[in-house]
Amino acid sequence: MLSNDVTTAPCDALLLTPKGRIIAPLRVLRRGEADFLLLTEPGLGETVRETLRRARFAAKCEIEPERHTSVLVWDGDFSEAAERVDEGLEPTASEEELERARIEAGVPAWGKELDENILPAEAGLDRTHISFSKGCYPGQEPVARLHYRGHANRGLRVLREDARPGAEIRYDGKVVGRITSAVSGVALAYVRANVPEDAELSFG
Image (cartoon, rainbow, N blue to C red; front, top):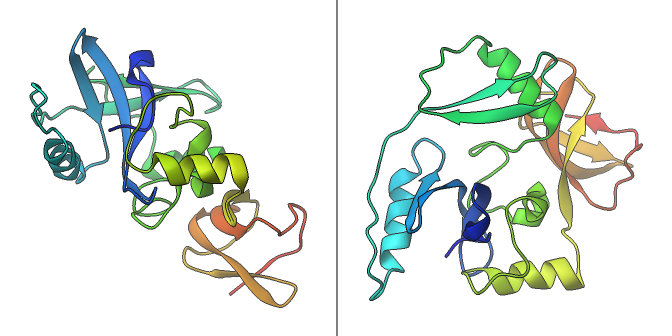
């Protein structure tokens, strides 16, 4: 059911629709031979459980909801982060600092860069959340076809610009993208793939 090979857990993965759209992003942890913990975004737990339950068929497995806390621990300059689960750590970074670090790293967030209309390749998740050698999963065919035979028409980019979320991006007089997240001086945006990286963009 998942887009990545869970035998390599811990790993990132996706639940996808048959058309390759994102249902939920997941972090997969292995706690035992047949015991996996799937971490997802707040509010998506029931969606994940129901999607897996409907696909269970005759398999003898249990799918139960659990509550956990997850925090990110950065090194001193915010260049690398590690996830810690249920360690009771108190946050020391502000929401603004976390958001800036996420945007500068180009990490998509559910409800901002990710929703049920996004293809994994558009958000760059084909590089981190998908195995192209594992067995079947929902959405595998369109994901593989795009990977091997084509390219996404748009992609997620970090822009060193002052902009506001929702603003249209224009290049050469045409709308070529949209800002999804922003803090002072830096933004994340979906931009058409044919727009040069060094293009002079305007926002409105």
